[in-house]
Image (cartoon, rainbow over all chains, first blue to last red; front, side):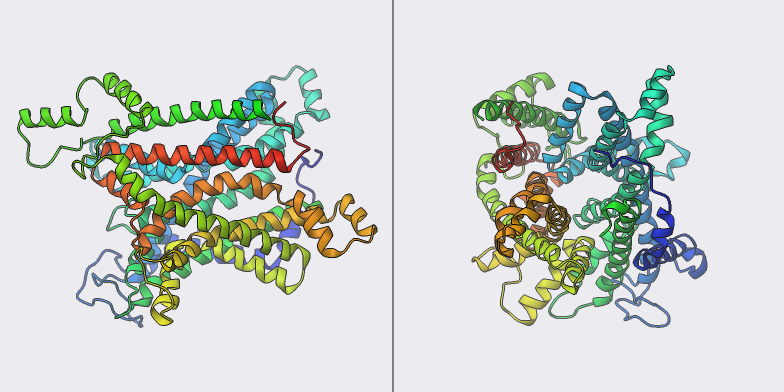
Length: 303
Length: 306
């Protein structure tokens, strides 16, 4: 395996040449801006109840209103904040765990490596969402009790989000670990590692100074692909009623409400369509970007 | 080969032991027992209830007792559905989930392999582009959006298939398609890139140079090698389908094990919950063993059983 080389020069240029990737980046930047500054600009309270139930989209309510007369546009923006927060931080957690695990496994090699990879294989085979549900069910009340004492209990509402971020992050690291391990396995037999070793550098320093920088490309690619996976997982939890706590909304919980509003008698289509479009476009853009990054960093595999 | 299977079987038992242990303690760690209600029940009655459901004694006694019962194939009684055993509930609900899962499994594998190979063979044509675009779209849209949309189209507008429930074979179609969708896409992507790599290899060129027809080269030579990444994904696929079926059962209102799982959490039905987790894991670990064996049979270059 000789494909574990530093990112080839011009990767960034190749990425910018890819029109789909550029469009994806622009779209993601737009969504991020909307999520960050949206509430300040539009200043509609996503939790404000009103008598205007099930209003169709109009100038007053861009995306219409829901069963409680809440503005769907404001709720989609709130959903973006929470979904993106969960996706980003969950992916970051998985990045830390996956990269360290993969590097240690690959660097150690031998029977330690075999054992560690067998463990990953076992985790792959376990129904992960079931374990996550179990973990949320057990630790959410505990964390709530813990947070109730901090800062007058204003953080209690966030306990479920925190649990979701950590449990999803701690479950989505497997692919990352496998890929990093493969790269390290190839890297560590190269001359510069041998040189560093013969200069008397410690294993820790070799890992951090020499191996890590060479892993940046591949790690970024899988980070880009982990974010949508985490967002999708969270949406499943919300759909089952185990995700973020009402009245907070994530794209998943909005979609769950929207899916229930589709029936033969009257379909309040805007409750499903707008969150679905927002979430699908974001995930699509992230997946596109991840694919494009992979192509840009690996010109040999370019097709 | 026999030694390999035996070794894998042994590790399977170890995995299951860990699953049982972790599940047991996780579930027992959870706050609120199955009998804690808002109104306090008299101590004597509570004690009797706990004894009846074998929830008395120290945690260690309970654990060893539970292990013993499991070894006899007894998953104990459900605390919510009084007087019904977990075995009974699972025997009644799991076959439904398994049917949906199996249908989705076949659909995802066959559809994904076919679509991926097609895209690779027609590389850089509009077939390839649209197939991969569709695949990315299918991965990006959650099943609880595609499900209701499919219902809207095929059940409500066209009236071809039932909206939900579990009555005839027709009830199987929409849930299986909904569940399989993202995995058809995932396998197609996997298959395409693997096939593209294989089609560029020397043995394919040799086969072509010998004058073999396109379909022979594709199906007899290339597919055999290109399918390997897909085979190693089959284990995780089964795990994903199993959890995915929880969502799909909720969408289509199907009385499968998924519904019981979610309800058992809400009702703190400790033994039903652990029972479902344990049986699910056992099923998956067994499936993984089969996949491992299939892998060694398919790929002679790998000698796992050395």
